[in-house]
Length: 153
Image 1 (tube, rainbow, N blue to C red):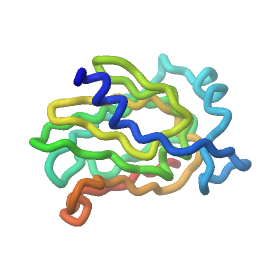
Image 2: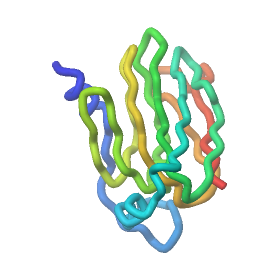
Image 3: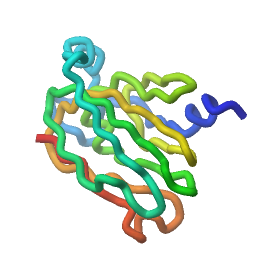
Image 4: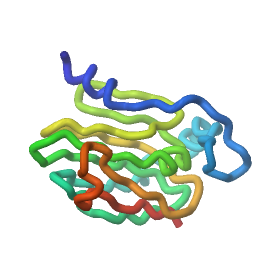
């Protein structure tokens, strides 16, 4: 199966919701297109996260609300891994997720799966502030320490 199809299958979409005036709750940012369009992508900051067995490096990521980012998720391990952060994904304005084989545009994601040797790039603007957990949902990876925090100020 081509890499693009693997990447598309790895992007788990949640059902659509409605943004309710600044809370992350069960809803996502519905005016993401406006936020993404207004962002200064020429001033985008890139953060690289290396993913390997039972570890994200860095484990904790600090972000600024309103600042556009590219989050590079690089799997340098020997197994596939997830970057699962449902509350975080709902709290950001997503531009796209891109791999070398293509890109996916969606209102938000539940998790991103990065295959061995693969890389997914998430382009986004943080909207809501808070602390959001991120973890791997494969087998016992989270219990073995594969988790971290995304903090938006």
